[in-house]
Image (cartoon, rainbow, N blue to C red; front, top):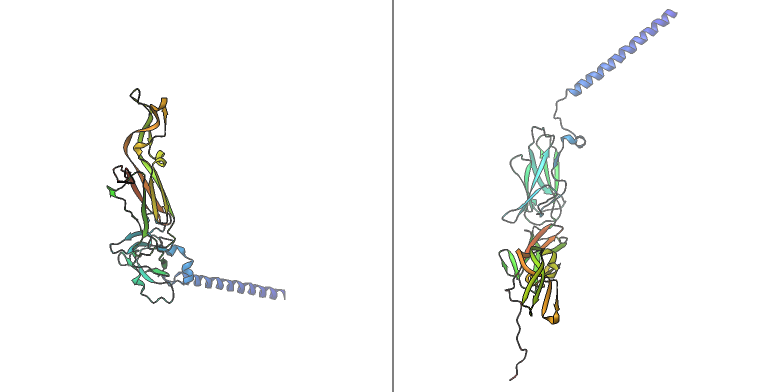
Length: 341
């Protein structure tokens, strides 16, 4: 009886081992079949999102602001304006990995808003540099509302990336108009007068957003003058200079000019000629001797002023060269206000 039980147990162990080996063998065959599947099979959308090393992306992470024209464009795109006034930007797609053999892509454009019936290419177009190129020119023809979507698709495996195009009414140019005479790139102004310069922001679409209305304006003096203590005696007939030194016009600009900006207008007021500058004056011994402190003696090179105006949201700016000219007429008077006969 004991021998019989031992024999049954031995057979049971053998069958367990056999079944275990069969299970391991079948698992190996399934794994071999999966590994042998051909590459390039369609990948479900969920799997695409989980494989960033195979994804494609634009070189800009922000919406394209089509009317932007500043040189330090943060989106990484290049902006230009054609002769016809159409604003263009260069958009680049990057296919990854960098070792991919087929980097050809196709570009599409469409409205991102439902219910838009207008032809999207009447407003914005996207033109690849060549067939399958990863670089394309995005051109805006006129102002629009809503969103436009640019989609780029890889020809291999069909990966996609999108860029949202919006119209923000960003200015592309700052225009200054004035009645002040200009010569050689400089505005010539008289002494003791007030002058105005009108400032306007424009773009090819004639549609500038009202948010672009934050200005900074300042003035800088250019050049240097020689000043010194100057003593003139009518009794002794002397004309002496002491303690001569060179100072910048910028350090003395408040004595010559004031500049302000408000409501689209730069106001420039001229106070006195540079050649008439002195810090203080006093008379001695009955007024027969006059003493000037820090009196103007001569100029060192050209002396003038630069008025700088900048709109901070667009970074558009202008610099105006202001030159004092004492030959400009600034008024008229008569020796008598009344004559009687």
